[in-house]
Image (cartoon, rainbow, N blue to C red; front, side, top):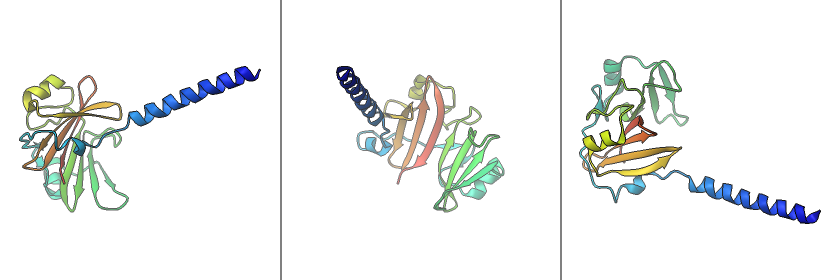
Length: 172
């Protein structure tokens, strides 16, 4: 009887170890770890007339009043959310000190300045942005990103079979 108990305990120990290794092995890697090894790409990014550094007033002038506003717990930034569903927005802009420092869009209603939008393929991105990119994993999606080191801008495309979302942010 103890023989089966120890064998079962051993198998449980092995399975637990594999699970822990899998979970820690699938962690995310910060995009800045790729900064030094990734060549610069010119990224004159804006979406529908909104650009990094635009004021909150400019955002409202172009896009109207946000459907939702989320304030960070430490009150250092607000997220201006556009779309009917707060959990599945069309576009979300992060505003700090009254200026846009990051934006995400998840709808084909919006596109990057080079015409990439939700639904495009990795090949479409390569045609428009070129080969100077990095890749990383984030919460089950493949991320393809570019840095503009002169303008201190980063753009990332989250991909499943196609583009699911696009994030543009300032590099500090």
